[in-house]
Amino acid sequence: MSATRILLLLFTSIFFLFTLFCFTPLSHFSSPVLAKALSFFHHPTDHAEPVLSISTHQYHRQRSEKLILQSTSPAVDEKDVVVLTMNNFSDFVDRNQYIMIDFYAPWCYWSQKLAPEYAAAATMLKGKAVLAKIDCDQETELARKFKIQGYPTLLLLVGGVHKDSYYGERTRDAISNWVNQKINNVVQNVTTIDEAKRILAAESVMVLGFLDSLQGPQSEELAAVSKLHIDVNFYQTSNVDVSKMFHIDNQIKRPALILLIRENSANHTHFLYECQFNRLAIANFVSVYKLPSVITFRQEDASDIFENPMKQLWLFTPERSCKVVSIFKEVANAFKGKLLFVHVEIGNEFSIGRHLSHEFGLPEDSPTVVAYYTANGVVEKHKYNGKLSFCGIKSFAEELLEDQLLTKSEPATKKAVRLPLRSHASDPSSVLHAY
Image 1: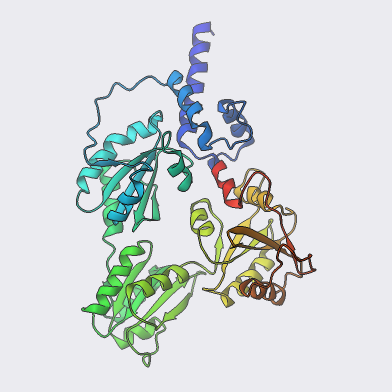
Image 2: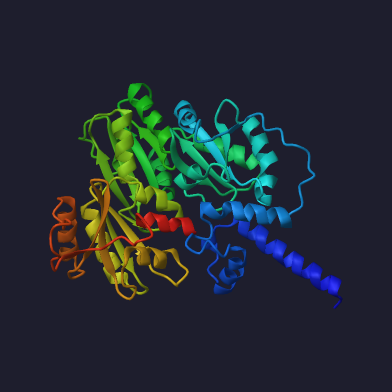
């Protein structure tokens, strides 16, 4: 093989690895071989920082300028795409209900390829939703705030809150259709038993309002909440027979609300709301109860978990821990709406579960329960030191709920042991920047 062909093959390989790395989160690379290969692009002086941390973006941008030829495509007409910075972000979010944000890097090939399609989608959605973009090379604080891990990343904000992430095709039609579907989430009427059966068979999470009328103030309040929770389908009925299908007793005073969530293959768990029927109270109810009793930790749920103000109970388990997971779920059902329960599956050495376990300072060979909460602005973690039984974990949860766990001035007891935060992180969520 000639020297020219060898050089060409080497350049092509480097180019492929770089373009793959510039837009793909590290969590997708579970292979040790790939991880080692990608370390080629890691600056030797940045070992204290995660591979995809914001502090190394400038380095990757400079390297990419040497490897990727400047695009010769015509300039993109981005007249309907809003450029967001730290200076205008808060004010802009306060003034707009529906915002999609493209977190991009100017040097990233895939960000460049998305730009014309995104700009066209912005024009198509004008008057319905606003499409904006953030340069993560320049706006590193905003990139950290939203835990951006790859480029481009598309997020949908509703009322200033991150509600969903876009993983579909990177075309103008696909993007605009997805946004339209999300913002047009309407309350659907249920008037017959057959309709109710179809909905119950299809939905994993849903809300039904049992109202005096399908039009009027009650329906309007429900519709307003549906716009805030675009990840949940909302229904309404005034039919008593239909309401029975959704576990609503016909003696219940209207208006009432029920949220059903399927946590196994057959049945729904239902939560009834009979309090003041206004959008704020309903929205809070849905926010609390739409989550499963136990959240199995996934990368996409990280922000919702760490930013949730509720006190939390975490279960870390290695493989083959079905019994303790079942007990943990049973305890969680008793504290629904009071505590947040999170399950972390500890996998191989490259898994996020293993990294989180390390951040919490836990053993990796046995199931462990940890209380996680913030007190006076300080993150507190306490490891349960008792028997992993229903009564034991339930008692620990009650102590967490009633603020009876250890304080810094108290010695350790047999039931709970304070876990120190690791020296390089202010809280366990910081580990997420590495993925």
